[in-house]
Length: 439
Image (cartoon, rainbow, N blue to C red; front, side, top):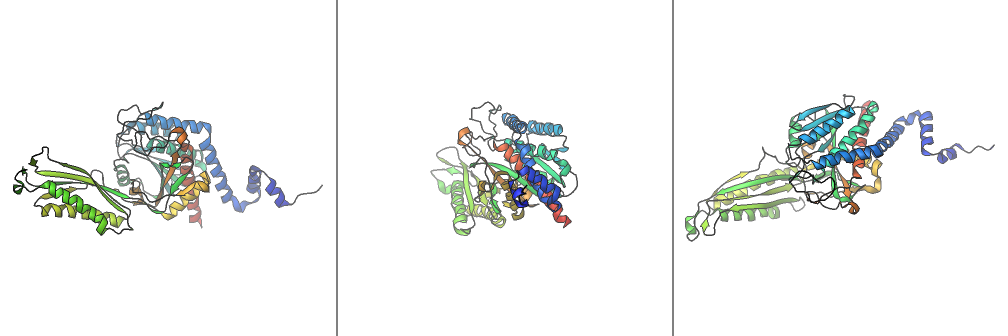
């Protein structure tokens, strides 16, 4: 009988048999074997038909009953129902409708996963079995999918709880669209002891099965402003008796554009858009006041702060030149200024690694910097983290329309992918963190 060389035997074995040999004969590689086997188990659970059907069911139920910012009572109840069935403890209410759950040892290290859950004031135009049942409200930004994916991750992690090396904090956040939810949760102590945070957002530009992100400056900071300019009205035939607020407002709008063209570094992208102008009600009377409003955006925190300051100075200055007064409001107490979303390079690299394990290297894209904003940035002001875009584009199912469109829809095949990436990120982060601390 001729025996084959040991290396030949190894390479001819099926992966599962090779895995058993490694487990039994190579103790030094236990960490690697555990990492590989856990990843496979995460993928297995996520793609199990029962899990996939459950993820779709949850997402569709949320989609049928969309709720606006800080009104997510039904959505919150659904989340708590599912967590109760899993036997996962949670804290509620947080920031009115938010739910904070924990899976694992209850001890450090702590890593957080976040999903937003509010809808938009949009009338859905997509005709399908699970169309919104609430007139004028729609999940047109994928938050229903975000909640479903995070619940999926909760189920996976609960199955793996005995081997978790720390605690996963699950954040179900209200009011992303109104920019108040994340800030309120942070003030409420949701990040206590948390070392890192991760979130996923659907993206219609990328095909299902792909993901995209970038290290550093990713999404712009965003603020809104409203300026009321008060003058003195008169008959339009005798303008010399007026302090014309329309003229002052018009000069302000032109001067605001000069902030971008003449004060901002061309290599430091910034935007000011005046999108509202209201004044007067008749053709032959110069009114007493005018109101303008708009948005401003920048990627760098310093640039964002300077831009806000200069908007106020320009409007006040132009009003004074035209013998008017002004009041500029940035709504900081109502909805706040959203800071730039800046992905921490270390956490970005970890998210990249775990995403490769789920979707493969060829399905990972480097995203461009985007002028859109996300209140996930409030968490990143306090702990390192990373935001990942997950593709939902699929022409076959009609998932081709942008977020905030009444025709927006998603390819539900994304749900188990997102759940697996969430779970893989958290599990492997805790594993790596405890190994580093041991070293």
